[in-house]
Length: 99
Image (tube, rainbow, N blue to C red; front, side, top):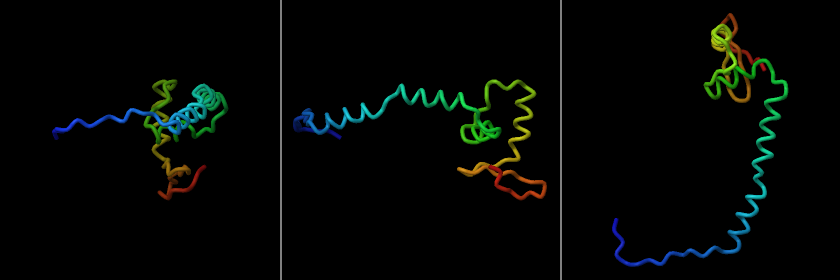
């Protein structure tokens, strides 16, 4: 696509847009969000948190050694995550809501 005519660029910044940018900057406090994430990491998580995190992100906790990793995969294959519920497959192959 070729433009033959010179088109003026509108580089003015209306005051409404400046106010919107300032309000967004004030409402998004990165430090508070990082503290919130840290607080989530520090509190006691339920026993199934590692399984749910694995099913959502596909990442295994890095603190697992070889044995824990093998056991984790063996245990995780019996669970199914359908947000916001975790289901476990029973011995009769029926999924039941677990948590």
